[in-house]
Length: 311
Length: 244
Image (cartoon, rainbow over all chains, first blue to last red; front, side, top):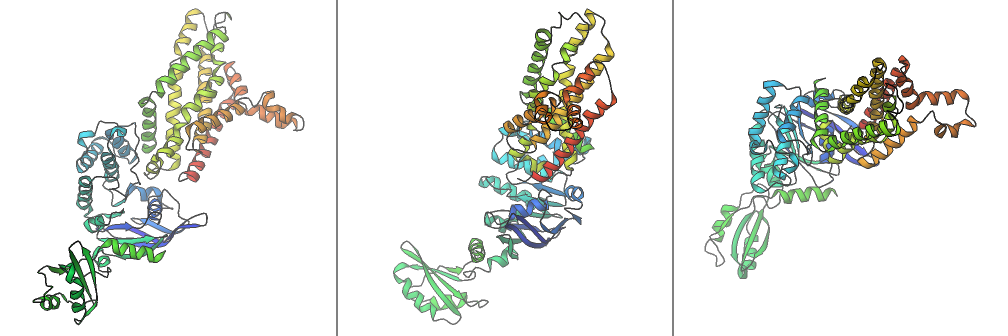
């Protein structure tokens, strides 16, 4: 559905996007991650046909974005960064305008607008001018505009930026609901969002793709992923760590102070499950606590490792 | 085509969504009336025509039309909606034409609102209606030419004030291309054909011919080609600068 082939964009001597290639298939929700200035928005603008690539190619549903821009744009719903909309128009007038430009009219237009409005819960503010709306509603007007024509491909640039936690939750629910048979790319800074809605994640920095995997596989790259964690008294943490380090399969152990208590994290060699061994070993020790479990890797840790190594 | 109409309708409604439309129409009508009766000596001339009215159109347009045109692209660029507009399935040309048609229709509304003058002159005497109709048509075409220039300038900048000032300056030069003010720098050295070409490029020269009742196809073609040229230029400018 979305194919990028060595897509590049230079601004002067700066390579904003450097030979990026990937494919997004029907049913996939791709999280597009990267630090500010990594090239996320530039890549999305090229896909949406707003910026002309300096090199390589991209296509939406088989239509090259440079050679067949109109056909590509017909299949695409795009939410630009910041969800721009005409401030003087009402939400209804704005959506009518979008429907008109997209060639929808009469009952079909009314029906599609009704569907999009219901999906984005805009009914209450439909007849207010857009510049009187809160940030959350403005963002939802932008989303309604993007999904209005039920496109096969959705590209959303920071769809939840600036929303409060409830609104974020709603928008994520909306994306999950409509994902079904579409190919979706969302860019975000919020890593929990990737785990919440994305089936795949790409990390990009300095215009290059650095990782392309499922969120779970990325999480597994965290060295702490799968480590066993025990909560003990801070006073005995040192003793515990020395004892635990002698267990077979254990490669590292460290302490994270938590006030009067401390967390002891025990890492094993990759693929060696040690949680049972640790539990058995710990039982009966003077420092034992009943509180042990495995740690799930943290995406922000992985993100930092990947993007700072590249710098 | 449908997209062009949708854009034109939105743009046209946008004039009326803000006080711009009413302010513009009031000022245009007040100035047009005042100039006709005081500077144009409408009554003292004792002739049943609208020469006194049409004579001042180029000067009114000089600063009023750039005021309509300045927002066309500058506002889209400043507010970021240009990214929305140009990622919809429309060609840049369709967007440029849609905006132009809306602004031109708005000028048409302003002109239609001056029809009471025509009624007045018909009541007072027996004017040549053909000349008046031709003058209206000529005035509207000239407004289109000013608009096309203004739209091209608007596409160059995010700043509406800059768009206004530059468009007014460019229109001033084109309007007066036949006058000594513009010709003086050329008259010493340039061949006579260049000076004549410049005179032929002047809005004023062309428009005066039309209002005298001399409808020459070349004058109509002239205004149409000015409009066409600047619309093409606008498409090129928007495509080149849209993301800046």
